[in-house]
Image: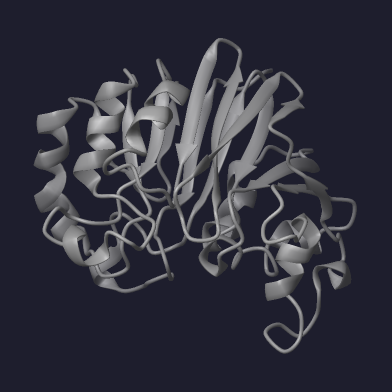
Amino acid sequence: MEQRPSVAVLGVRGSVPVSGGAFLKYGGATTCVLVRLAGQAVVLDAGTGLLDLPSFLDAGEDRLPLILTHPHADHLLGLPLCPLLLRPGFRLEVYAAARNGLGAAEQVRALLSPPLWPVGPEALPSAPVFYDLPPRLELGGVTVERMEGAHPGGVSLLRLTGGGKRVVFATDCTVNGPGAGPLAEFAQGCDLLLCDGQYSDAEWPERSAFGHSTWTAAARLGRACGAARTRVIHHDPGHTDHLLDDAAGELRAIHPDCAFARAGEEIFL
């Protein structure tokens, strides 16, 4: 039976993973999302949340596409220890746009090879297969389109459409100011917008060049593009559950169905 369209948030922390009692509600794992549309599962980014992916899969799911938005370490750290890559016969198909002249395999290998990691990805029992990410990609019944976002080194902002539903994934991008217009058009009328909102308005003046956004800018983008629901992602490692809870009202004041995403939540579309 085809599963209901959904988005499972496996990891939502930015920059580095965190742990401890102050981060239990929103989670400490870095960015990873599982999207299901039109009977097709697609994984977005390979942060440490990827380690929880097996618990969200059905028996017999042994082939998955994984799309990397960019190769910064917090978006790759889950890949070498992903339990699925230790399972004989599993096939993970990794897509990424070229960055600094490096294709998908070279980007991953830059982190996952000696001396930073003892072995390369090809040494895993079920080694991932790498592909370049084109501007438009068909995966089963899902169409994946990308645009470039404002982030050091570049980032792919992703639009997934299938079965009459649309999800936009806009992590690690600056939407404070001019960057919001093109992305609002790209995300127009989506069922779910997942948007970077790492910083508060008070933090923004000292962090405006870091390639991220404020959570209020993310909420305004959700309102501008008419997103049915907006979830703010890429939480700063220093932002505790208490801090995010206190800021939740700022989001709702801008967009009535906007909230901080929580690791482990499943959003049905």
